[in-house]
Image (cartoon, rainbow, N blue to C red; front, side, top):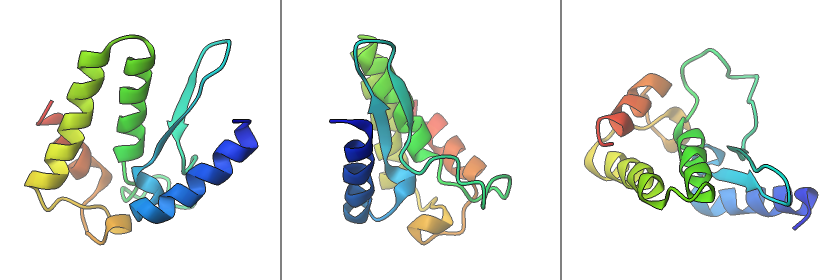
Length: 111
């Protein structure tokens, strides 16, 4: 889809996921791909340590898949799923009190 319509669809999908902090996005066309979280830069909470890092981490998985590195992409996706399944580490947007660093470390420990 065009970028505008993709933005609208991804924002609507955030309702199903429960948080914009969970959704990666990719703009892929004839040229290089661009991968970024649906939520954008979130300047109002930047530097506070409360941003959900999962969308950014899942963008890495999308980029790896786009580059043909499916095994590495799957490893990242599995680490995110395991961190959510095996721990109670949650950022405020998911109803928790954990920090960006704590959730990132929970994922990294599972890669």
